Image (cartoon, rainbow, N blue to C red; front, top):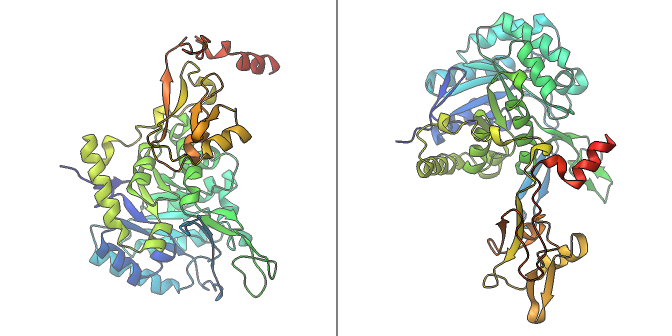
Length: 433
């Protein structure tokens, strides 16, 4: 039997899919619908101290679409909740009472004063919530007020505030990290040093998604003016995976629990985050794109994949990919592949030939009748042809044995470098350093 049950920091939920702190978790009505649809948990949209926030009443989202108008990313300029704190707290209490088996974590952001954190933590504890998430990541609006990313970009502040919170509450504390920083390991280490029970990442990326070329205002435009916002959605997933991996394989982290965020849209995305060490995943843009019922596909897809792999629990594959993340210098230079084109699948569009001829290594020849063939001695296995080919499986990579020769020319097409430092490129690089 396959179980999707998640136990993150002792917070139990029926599956590892939580809704991230965002518009979908801003009120009881939304959260109730989410739990009824099957979501495992929520992180309630970030609360602050009264007087409450005033959001803009114009457009709040900018968008980036793929060629088929599939939403690739959202830029949002919305701030933390603009609903009164008392109302939010009462609704959290009601939700936790009615859904005791689902995870309810509360996101918090208040000024960098210890008393402010103590005050709001006392009130959150009274709701019966399962934990708190410290929002040190919001890149717009709040950061200009000395909160959000303004804290998350300074490790000393992260450590200080986290320590305040840990000394003021018995609840598990998750620190939400900003990606708007050079090396994610430093804020993560600071969170751990401050006593954080876990980190969550990534928060949104500071961005401008476009400019209206009629009024020359960044989008979304508010009365002819625009501002940077937070970018999220499928397009940020590669950045999120890399940052998660950096923390997961950092020896100073000592297996610090991670909640993965950033472009989770399918069950496969979730499996990738978990395989890189995450104990659960948080979702926002996918729910805002397709609605709460997407959880049915997420749960069913992940469970089916786990059955096929022989996994019975999330723990069976959590972190399995971490050991395979390494630095460039440790890559095996004896591993050599060459592209192969399946002529039965080829539709003769010529995209592989065009990009290889113009921008790569001139390793694809166009024969009569638009038959495209790989020139092995020129192919460096860059993979570009596969990435631009519109037919799945038409172009593949064949692994060569060390010392294998081209049957047509007799030339060695896979030199056998027993040690990566013997490679001419690396010898030159090492000597220059």
